[in-house]
Image 1 (tube, rainbow, N blue to C red):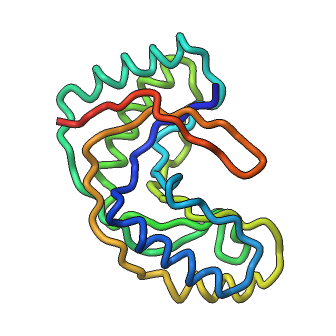
Image 2 (image 1 turned 120 degrees about the vertical axis):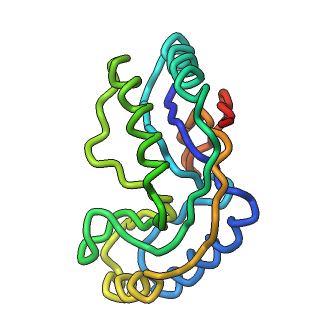
Image 3 (image 1 turned 90 degrees about the vertical axis):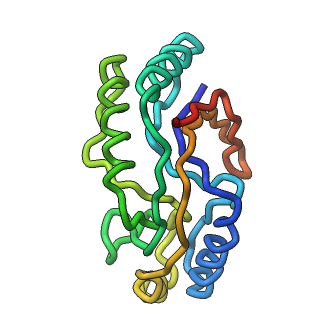
Length: 183
């Protein structure tokens, strides 16, 4: 099964994020937007794992989070990967990424010891769309610049969720496998 660890988006922020997507759609570029119910911050993409690996991931995560308190991230600003003149992934950023980045790095150390690939330079981001072609690229870049300071608001991080991802012709279907509450 394909799996990843995620921070879910508070339902109160979804409409603000969808409004950003709607604003970007006015550029009429070739972008596949992430559906509202699938919006999340990926902490780690594991790829294909076995049920035994899922259990190991769960056990390590529970242990690591025993003394981890909940915290708040502030979602603000748009950006792209790899770079603005060649956008492939459209995202919303985090204004205060330190605590989230630190948690991700500590968890990643555990998962690397399990045999998963180490994250290179992890940048907390919320993927909102993927560019699928060159149509109206300049208009898209202009819209991203226009929204670079967009303010979505605070996101309480109170749990991590291990999710299964089933790819379908109409897009991915995510299923929660296990939740890991933060203290």
